Length: 441
Image (cartoon, rainbow, N blue to C red):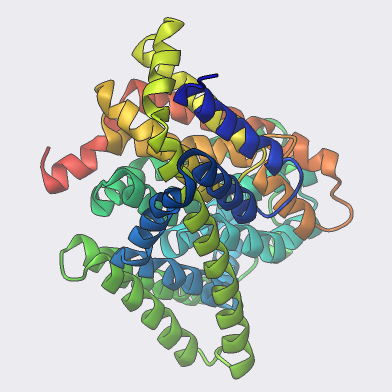
C-alpha cells in the first residue's frame, strides 16, 4: 500500500499534538516525533536532515543575544531597579483614578523595551505592582488582567526575543522586525491605558485615587523620584538606540545592554554576590530551556518540510476556497489554538517554517506577518483554558485571587488585542511605516 507524503505530514503533526497532551517535556516530544519519522521514512540516512537543521542554529551568531536579553531581564528585577521605577509611577500617577494600573502599563512597557520577554514583566508586576494595588483597594480582577496584558508587551516591543527568533526562521532582518514592532507595541499599550482610564472614570471604585495624605508629597521629592527613570532610559538607549544608529550590531547591542545594567546595579549598590548568583542561574536555566526547544523544533521542521507539508497545507486551504485573506485568518486562529498548549517559541519554530513560505507565495509582506504572529501570540498567552500567562499568574498571585478571577480578568484585554490585530491587518503601515522610513521600502 502506498502512503502519500501529505498523509504522513498530517500523521506526523497529529502525533506531535497527541504526545504534547501527555504532559511530557516539549523538546522531548517534538524531537522524539521527528526522529522516529525520519528513521521510518528514510532509514539511517534520515538523521542527516534534523542534524543539519539543528547545526544551522548552533552556528547562527545572533543567537548569542538570547542569554544576554534573559540576563538583562533578571538583573533588572533582582537588583531593585524595577522597584525604584514603580515608586516613581506610584507617586506621579497615584492621584489619577486607576493611576496605579495605568502606571503599571507604563512600567511594563519600559520593562519590555529593556528585556524582550514576557516572563520578567509578569514576575515584576506580580511581586511589586499587584500587592500595592490590592492594598489600595483596586479591583482584583481588573488589576490581574492589567499585569497579564502588560507583561505580554515584552514579546512585541523591541528588543523582542520572539522577533529575533522569527527573523532567524523567516530569514528576515531583525532590525526591520524590531522597527516594525515599535508602533504596534506602543499602540497596544495606549489602548490598554485608554481602557483603564475610561473604565475607572465610569466605575471609580475599581481604581480609586490615592488619599489626600498619600498625595501630600513635597514637589521636590517628586522631582527627585524622576531620577529613577534615568537608568532605564540609559539602558534602552545603549541597547536599542545604538543598534538603530548603526553603531552596534545586534549581538553587540545585547552585550552593551547587559554591561550597562550591571554597571547601573553596581553604582546603585544593589549588586551582591547572592544576586549575581541568582541571576546567572536563572539565565542559564531559561537559556538552556530555549535551546532544547529550538533544536528539537528545527529538527521537526526539517522533516515536516521534507514531506512537502508547505505545499500540502497550501493545497488544503485553497481546496476549500478560503482565498488569501481567509488563509491568513486561518493561520492566526491556529496560533491561538496552539497557544493554549505551547509557548510562543515552540509555536513559532513548529509552524513558521510552514507558514512563512506560504505567506510569501500569497504575496504578503513577511515583516508585517511577523507582527501579526506576535500579536496573535499575545492573544494566545491570555486565552483560557491553558493560556501561558494565565498559569504564570496563578503561580505568582496571592491566595485571594482565584483561577476564576484570573480567567475573567483577561476578557476585556483579549478583545483589545483583537482590535489591535485587526487594525494592523487593515492598516499594514502601522507596522511597516517605521522600518520603511528608516531602512527604505
